[in-house]
Image 1 (tube, rainbow, N blue to C red):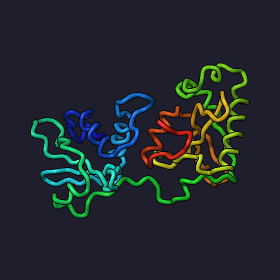
Image 2 (cartoon, rainbow, N blue to C red):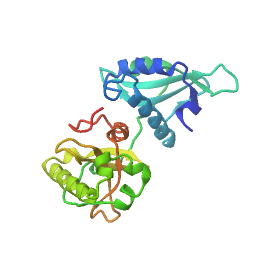
Image 3 (cartoon, rainbow, N blue to C red):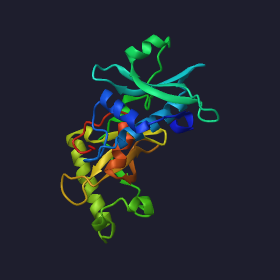
Image 4 (cartoon, rainbow, N blue to C red):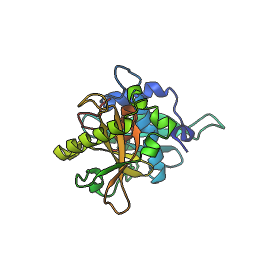
Length: 246
């Protein structure tokens, strides 16, 4: 069940504007002002909280922890009341409120944030391990190959271009392991590595890497656009890298 199955959200865009002011950061890509990142963030956060059974409900209200903070670092919660419209979703999104405002509602303990990992080491790229790309998927899957720059997609040297980009990315990781940005996908942590396929220092794609079963290498399973990569990474935390930005 998704957020919009759980609740009727009313003028959702207007409420997201309020939330973006309450928890200010860049929530839109490029020069847009549509809070698209924030929309994706909340929808995926809700799904994870539902999996973890962390959504509070009683007879009159429902609450979940958005995982966001206001400017004073108080947690922000989504607050729902009973939907008065019959035969519709049970809940109605009333507002986004901080911990102080929620404390008067008699909820104890307050709902927890979503959790995406149990071992902090999962968030750190092990530079001792090689990256092995899954080229049959990267080049064989139509949706995946369409994410590539046209000049790379149609090149007879595209494997060599990718190998070179991975080699450069490996050196970047050796210089600073924090270049790899964690994302949550398919119920596990993956690490996003920048691929500069056309110009040095300007990433075109992110390679999603995961350790193999015996943890002796990383498997580069698929390529993501930078927009897709940012949306996935933002679930865990706001990326602080110098290459993955909205």
